[in-house]
Length: 290
Image (cartoon, rainbow, N blue to C red):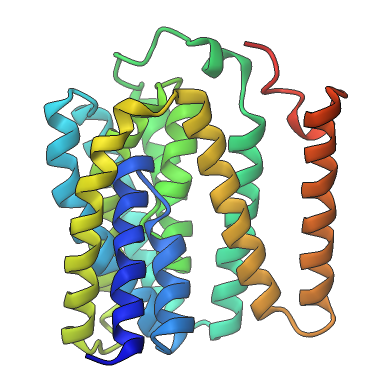
């Protein structure tokens, strides 16, 4: 077995851990993994990631359902609305330039990460709605918008669905993670159908990456009940932010990519200083109260 393939498979295990633990992040890892490590063209990497993430999410949701961390009505309705948007996004994405797709992918990641890291007081304190289903008037439009965006940029949607369920729906992180997997599976396969109208996949390596990701998802699911909710949410946000900055630094023309990386490191350093000195930091002001 080639060394490159071994590296790809090992990293695919991390994809599964991310999905099982966080209910998202799978495509955020899979797209760069397939594009930069497996050297797939961007459109093929995006389409393949939809299959990998969709299959892994479908199997992971079973374990979360056993822990009663899935709100089936909210997940199925959100997913159905998302499938419509995701299929349309997948069709459109097949005709967009590769660089545009990757930059759009990164911008959405950074915006979502900021929302998760800052959080909302009512989510941290607990709104009491974590065991309720979300209202239909909120599920349908959110699902359509998230589906369209994730269909275009090739993400299964966890990095948008989890924040939507937590920040807008008031669900606890464990429940949002489990419910998001239902949505991710539905939208991933819908987006894949859109991409397969213009993209052909090399299935053997795609299936190998999928198998490795499924193995990792089992480990990630076991960890969800052992990680504090606030730490899980903030960790999710930091993870998404780092990957977004990485993709931007790779895709933007020089010196813009270097500037993005330097600014990101400066902001990270400022945030760390705020933490260590207990100085009130605007970047974290919403998430401080407990």
